[in-house]
Length: 448
Image 1: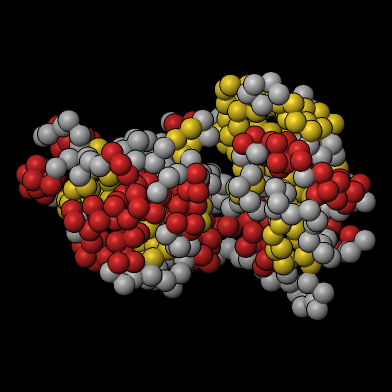
Image 2: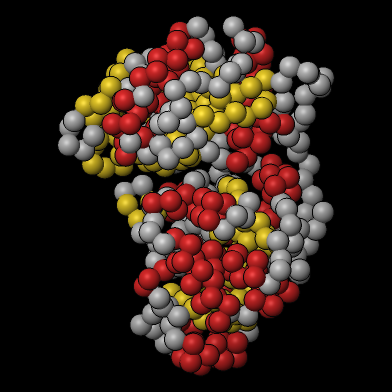
């Protein structure tokens, strides 16, 4: 399958990748195309803007998480529509620890043989922009950089720079996007605010779309996307069950404002193994879904809804009862915090949670064990990452987490019967055996 695609990357964080990606996706829809998108790296929030606001399917790809063949299979499996826009992470060559290529936007473009358009923050700069671009071109060993978009500069001055770029550097300048402060997306300690938390988000992204339509050569980008070679993956991680069953396994998935961090790839792997995903809200629902054989509590922002979570005593009691009866459970980060005895917020006020795991989560004011990890589990390794400002006095000790660089390691995760509960966000395609084990545990549990 020949999947048309381009990558939007940048020289550094804060250059405008997210807003221009959203603007380009909106512009492609305006042109009558059916785009899909991917985020390079472990970021949950950027894909939410694509999915929840723009209505565009979006997933995560990361060359630290998965080997090249698996990465290609994920892309092929999730590609849909006419064209894929891949949003880069940090600076183009910034991978693990900021110093390795693995995990970088460039490494993903290499694996997927994808042309790169560099988003350059040109505010306050002139000809110096050419020197910066030339440095990136010199470092581009695969010759993947095919053009640039100049961000935060006027259309008139951008046109002058574009002539210089094309004459001296022999790459295409696809246009300029004028600075517009009213479309900037706000950030906090965990990254961007969620789409539903931003006032007038639809108006902001509509304005960004119009800025892109006005200043960027959309037709040129579409044509560039068609120059890609066909890619083929050898791996097969989306293996369907060998025998169809009339009694489909049902997995209760917590999904609301407090619990919303899920990799599409993780859920797809469960579905490929015959699992039906049944969503419920720990904030609003008073009962678990009926006839479930497992529970998934993802990460998110439970700390922003502590009063409501504390007050919904009925759903808490049902979750604890189900866990006491041995239901298989996956709980990550915020979901793990929800299962503890209590959570203390930034003001040191304590809120009672489920109490299925002894311990308290508390605000630290700084990132804790931040970054990629490899988890040494029961005869296999699974990859993931941690990104949280809360910590706990009972982190778990069933497995060992190791940083990909250096010698740092620590104990993590509570393995309680068939359940895996802890801070690390796990990326299931990095260890299909993990999913197989959990699905088998759901089968063994049945509807007990």
